[in-house]
Image: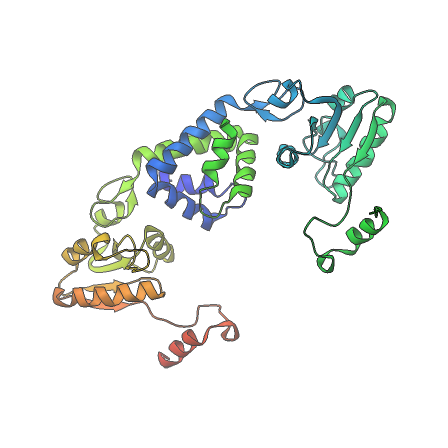
Length: 193
Length: 193
């Protein structure tokens, strides 16, 4: 295999890229050697060396505990449970949450053979803040909701209030394009103006 | 900027990826450190070091002249002109061409300020095989066709026959979905059965 073929093969494995876009990406990299190829090679090597999972919450960061776990301004009485680091990043981008996180590392799935022992449930139970709040921010999919119900049961003795994200109309969303389930949930959870 | 942000920023510049898919790719890389991140870092470094443009035809390869230019089984009397290395790869994948290539490096575009001096036209004129054939395999876009006409004029004194790719119905294509221009071209160039 040539160096180019090897590069295309690896790039094709990235999410969102396939064989065709992998070839386009490889070509773009080879054309933009100084501004893209070499910086990306360096960034990958640096990330491999410096970025690791936080042993407390599962976030990825250059320090352990991660910047969020170390931040004294973060409320330790608020713990937000997410499936994946991507979801943690998504919530951080909102700037609307000032507590801490717990990354489960997946959701229960009989189909994929993922049981409670494959997720960081012990860590969550250990960290659930007595007298505080655990916000379950899992995807609104069958697996996410199954996992949420499982966690609610397990968290019952912890002494923490357990909440979940609200369902409703996405901001900027049009009712006409919304599925019936979401619309029904939004109607049920209507708020006084 | 953290290492992760830097990685996301660079990945987002790859064709086919944006900020969101760049983040997903970064996360995937960090999760698959041994099987994806480190191999990709190594492949990029190797490609940066070993892959260079062929000084004869403009192809990208680990040797100069490239493997195609060096291959004695390749007919030097057939020269296929392409805009970009991606097009060369596409034609190579067909396995239907056993001549050599010439990568122009772009197409004429008044809008983007790309004139003949920005393309490897001198190299093409020098390499045009007297008594042989130059196949113009440029995109069937306005820029591609403008460039084709320009090249036909410049190649006239070379003593090479100049041809272009056929227009017609894509193999497996449905007439109903085809634009009128292509269908008209296919009708005009109909072949006896």
